[in-house]
Length: 319
Image 1 (tube, rainbow, N blue to C red):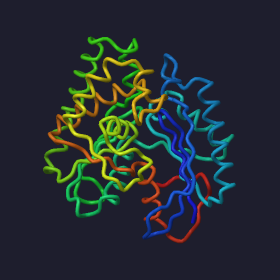
Image 2 (image 1 turned 135 degrees about the vertical axis):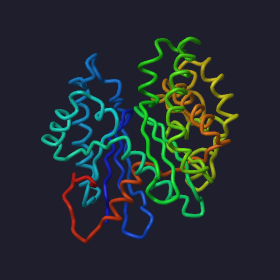
Image 3 (image 1 turned 180 degrees about the horizontal axis):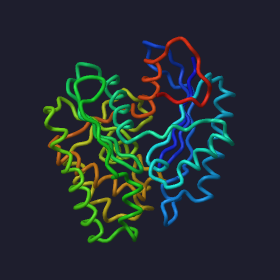
Image 4 (image 1 turned 30 degrees about the vertical axis):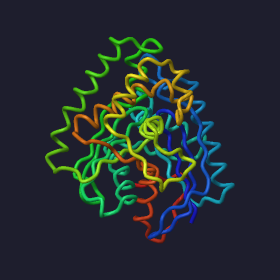
C-alpha cells in the first residue's frame, strides 16, 4: 500500500509517500518539502497570524492533491510544537479540516519522543542495546531512552532551534552576552532531566536524529546525504565544541555557505549547536550516531503495527 505522511513542523511542511506493508521496511516513493517557518508566524499573543494560517491551508490542500495523484490510499497527518503551543491552534486546525479535508493530529512532545525512539530502534535493531536518543526540532528537544521499542522515558523540552533563535538572539551574529545567556538557559533545562533519564541505566548507544544534528555532523566532516542512508555518520562532542566557536563568529549568510547547511536553517544552526553540545556533554556521551529515520518513519511504523486489514480514510491519523 502507499501511505502518505504530512508533517507540519515548526520550520517546514513535509509530505512523504512510502510504499509499505507489515514486516517490511517502508520504501520512500515521493517527498516534497515547503519552508513555511510556522514558528516565526506567531504574533505577540502567541497566535498563528492570518498569513501563516492561509499558507498552511494552501500547503495542506496541495499535499492532499499530490497524495491522490501519486496513488496514496491513506494519509497520516500530524503537527508538532508550533501548533501545539499556539493559542489559536484549534481554530487553525479546524480551517485545515474544513478547507483541505484532513484532520491534523497535534502530537504531544512525549508522543514525538516515543515515535522517534521507535524509528531509531527499528533502524539500529536489538543489537544496539539500551538506546539514548536526541532530536532537535524547530520548537522542541526530544529525549528518550530505553531497551525496548517503547522507551522507558520520553521527555520534551522547549529547546527547539527556531524557538531559541527567535526568543534569545537579537542580532546576526548574536552578541557574546546573548550566546552565554542562552547557553546557561539550555544547560539548566537539560540538567533538570538528566537524572530522570540516567536512572534507567547507562546507554549502550547514543543516537541523534533531525536536520540540526545532520547539518552539524556534515559540517564536522560526515559524509554528504548523496552517499545514501547506510553510510555511518557520527558527531563527536569535541567536534561540536569547536564548531560552536566557529558558528558564533559567523553571520547566517556565512553559515549558509557551509557544507550541508540549508539557507533556510542557517540562522538557527547556532542555537541548535548550543543545544546539541549541552545534551552530549550533560549526558556524558562522547559522540552520537546520526540516524536517518525519525518521527515520520516512527508514525509509519506504528501505523503498520496497528493494521488490522481495515482501510481508513485519508486524513485520519494514528491513535
